Image (cartoon, rainbow, N blue to C red; front, side, top):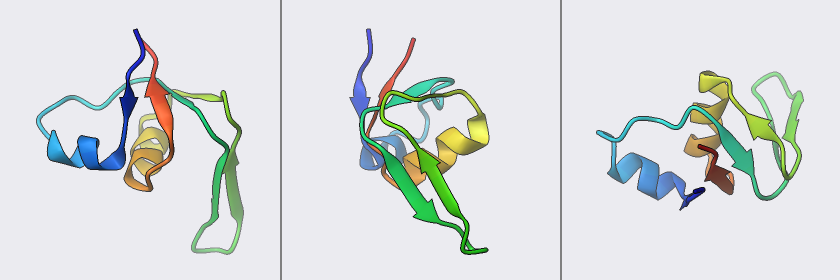
Length: 66
């Protein structure tokens, strides 16, 4: 069962383990410090722990995939 989480939920429950797979519910993107566009599509599954932490920290809308 997938649950919707927000960045606030993630920070409030810091003792909860980070998800290992998320699926974005909306497209999400930003320009990084090198002015390069980083973009993820709606429905894209993300499994890289560093990308998951980045996306959660920036508040990307997602569901946790189990």
